[in-house]
Image 1: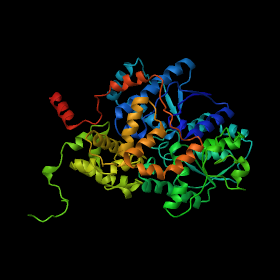
Image 2: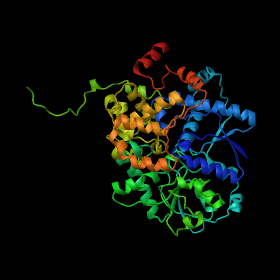
Image 3: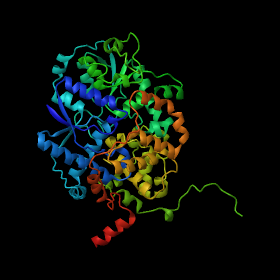
Image 4: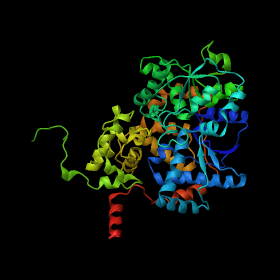
Length: 302
Length: 210
């Protein structure tokens, strides 16, 4: 199995641990990925707020580059781990398909740089790849350190399932739960798994944005979760990095480790702490907890 | 002299902008706006509606009625975090999130967004940095945002910044694509294109149709 990999800006910055752990896990499972050459930003929500057509053009350049690379290597699927990039690219793909007027303008714009996009690209999320292309039993057979006894809250966030739910159920997605259970862990029933974490509002309008993240954390802790796993760099940042600030602001302690689902997978697959970038996490694993016993986690927060 | 009565709350019909609804409806699939039955599902689904000055349902009604100034200068559209809960649940398939984006773009174009409110500043700064470099440099973006809105906030967040720095998650390095000229040519060719049509653009379309 091989894919073209689109990291996006966050996975090179605050979300570095997502890239590092994803690549380590893919390597352990022998899934081959190759980074898209000279990729550019997907436009995200901010770009869309200023110019929609240019946001589509940014995505279209990535598609054209991916097709060129695909042509050389025979791959057609673009793996996109960041939820915002995943939606941004997916949305552009659909609008180019549905609205000939937009398509014509974008094609003309691409032509000015001798680029072309011919509909031969698919946008895939790593969850989709792991659950649908890779076999669940093959993951189970490679588990070296079982996570039995660990209670996990799986957080999908918004943009993996809304507005398009391509590979999972929109109201009650289960792909991440399936993966986590394959590692031996338990998943807690948590109805807020697709509720908004506040997005960039946690930094811009903090008392509003952070309340949304706070609600998620309180509910996960209340339902007995030991750890939250996410599939989006912004969700991970919001839920983890503002915990001290939220505890003060809303006068109730919220302290729970928040990992990328790939980091949890890596722990079970026996990948080293360093390769999973556990040292980049904020919240230490509680001494004597299942997570700490399995992962060691002496690097966390160091 | 007449006694000060406070800000006038009522609007006369003659003050409304009847073309506003068609401006917003000019985005792809935007004409579904006119199917709204005011059921309020959008406001019920929206995790941010308790913090908004007008709920999403009210915004739709106001767009249709022509309350252009109120809609474009409201906090509502900027508080929309693009979670798409309203869009997927709307029984009339109205793409509310896209309508919020359209209102944001009009507000930026006509410079009527709430002053010093950080969200439109973030959007503009992000836009500029990606337009130039092709990628966003998170560290630089945050610093520019704080300088332009509330520099004091930078000190309040210094501890967080330090913790990120120690974990290798914060950097001031400028991220950029290699073939920037290629990217600039693409973006420049779209300079004059607008997805949300303004009143004048729409009048031109009607003239042409005749």
